[in-house]
Image 1 (cartoon, rainbow, N blue to C red):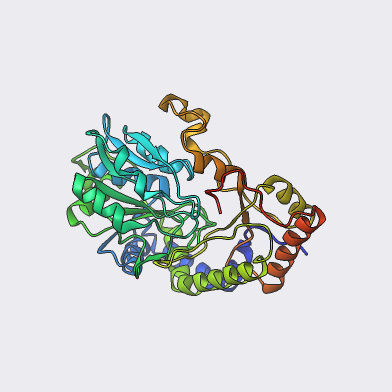
Image 2 (cartoon, rainbow, N blue to C red):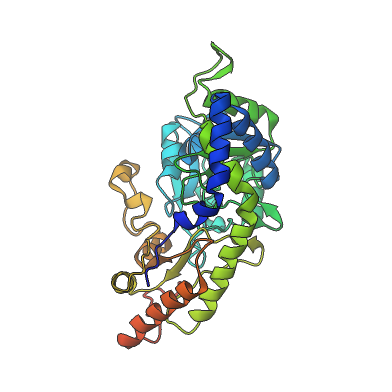
Length: 381
């Protein structure tokens, strides 16, 4: 059996005719500049998220960058975030001219440790950028309370959280604004690149719309410096076809995660922890083991393909050396980077594939006579 990390073809096949019909209609009309599909997607996805305003943009990095720009965050300002995320989170901060300030993660969830945020606030802090990683939201209420006391903006990095919920409210409606990615492997993915911004702030929405279109509110009238960050009309076609299926697909991911959890319950690995306040949509299914590299190699030999999200924390990346962080500054983040392994996860995954993966994981540990995970740090459980 062959089990890919993600299988996009399975999802595409039943949608192919509808997608091509949408392409044909869009191309016949040739309204390709922020056309009907982008405009309708802006209404549909913002409503899905429970937000008042939606702005289609070119990608998730641009979404976060535009939000920070619209909030007048730039040189001399600090934005608190995490180093356990894709580099785009921090790129957006740096491209705005601001400085990222890292806090460590909760070792159980790999999400921002909200209890550490207040200690990192300085007179230069202007915003906090929590990352809803792997399909689960950060613990937002205490974070929002701290931010309100200090007058800080809060920006959700919801690039891995399409449909995730916190206390019954969807990601994208939990803070001042949120950035989404429609990268093709996301729970809601384009066939290429795409991104989205949600907010309930009308003034902020107007400004962000202008920034994504060269700072223009009317053609050839540029009231501010912006950029070309527009969502492509044909990608909007794809996303509009897929959006009505998103909740079902997320439900399938949750079902798969439950099966993984049952099958791996006796294995010496740590399976994902979903907080009771959260509706986890399992963009990724990430286990932890000190034998991560050996297990990954073994699974590959069994035609099971896995990923590591993410192997090098951002504060230790060569491109971030100028920030002055050292190894040991973020211990939970650094330890997670050596132990996390993403198993195959996508809506169309079959039960027999999950059973095959789980059996291979257990066989690895049995062959190596490992019955308990031997973590160096007792805080990781």
